[in-house]
Image (cartoon, rainbow, N blue to C red):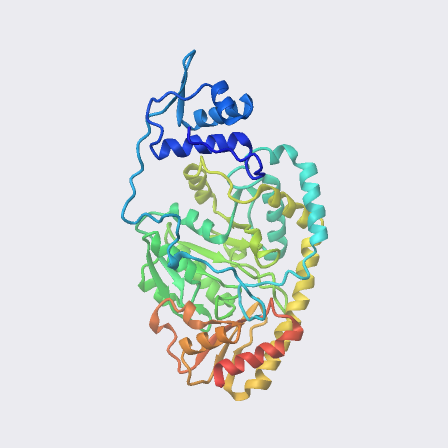
Length: 470
């Protein structure tokens, strides 16, 4: 049988060694198709092992289809096709261009707009809410959640966004998903193939690429002082517009009421026109009250509101939601009748208790204070170090702002230099949806401050100075 049993090995049980030995012999052709295997007792005597070990080994081979059994005759080798090894057979080696190195962020400072500070997150309170979710919703956790998310969670979100963002909806209109990109994909699957989409330029590149991959006609539309250009929307013959009115991404502009009314009036002029409002970080507003959502002004069910908990809770939580109009909700339920909820159900119920207990509101209030302090300190340090060589778009909202620098360096040069100095930055080049979208003779960076400790702000600015001017 060409099997060697090592009884001193702790890594495998005896039956696993028997199973592996016979399997290897079959795959190498040493045991031929339909060849009879020794009886359990005979093989146990040959190998000096128990009959149970041989029996377990045979049963595993039988379950995987390597052998077959004939009653009262014994076990036989199955007729198995040989593997075909193509020219590009990897031989268990991954090509170098696909390999990854473990992430090492030691010594890095981050000015990323995507990061958030979890050091002040109330994990103890979150775990208490998770315990309450397990205790209260055991039956629901044992089942697959409804595709739009558990009703009680949508009800809680509905009350919260009505209070904080003025959103007018019922819980039934809310669809929960594992990230805004996923929800955008689902939403656009409901639209006709000939839909024309307008997106802000500069804007969110991930949405732009997603829409193009879905084969929609996508038109990047320029911005003026009030937001997205209405004339360009009209000239593009768009019927769907993506906007970030409360804190335009990435410029930070806040859309005034006049442009909001223009957009809403544009949408109502045709039955198939919709506005997608991405309200990605509206929870963070400094010095004045929050700006109401565009959806709160909508009287004709033309605004599709999208929100996320990535900025306020944990980025890795992956819980976002959208509010659909009744006609789109009807289409959604028909199209996704057999779909499942992608978000973690336990996390959804935990979030429900986190909001209902008041911990969510307290956390957002606490982080607003922290982020406002960091924002002011970062702006002060930048102005002190760069002086006339920096111009800051000082909008008191969100977790980032736009800064323009006078420098002779190119975007490629500063990005390479920043990596050398272990400074995480994102340039405006990342958000230019068209090459000619940002033609000024200055270098623009999107500077985030959420994950930058106050004691590290001066050091981060010093590194940035070295990146841009030295």
